[in-house]
Amino acid sequence: MKDGVVIVNTARGAVMDEAALVEALGNGKVASVGLDVYEDEPEIHPALMENENVLLLPHMGTFTHEVSEADGGFLNYRGADEKTDEI
Image 1 (cartoon, rainbow, N blue to C red):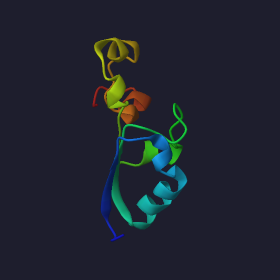
Image 2: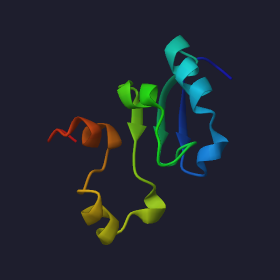
Image 3: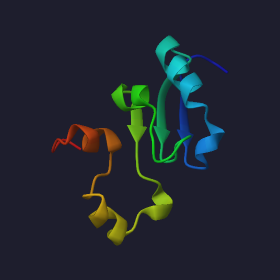
Image 4: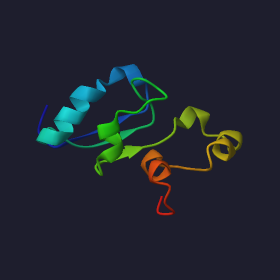
């Protein structure tokens, strides 16, 4: 794999080894990543939550009005974690 790739996983959380992904983000092998599924859902690797090159979304398969109301309408988990209005 070339350095600086962009990864998007919307398939299954088990497809990605999140610890390896964190390492690859740190060394530049992966430039950025977008995820809507997670290896150990509902837990998300803390280093992914802290990395500004990571976009974390709720699983689009559950993107319904009811789920959005239940989780407070957050579209980005990092924004939800920070509890900011800058989502």
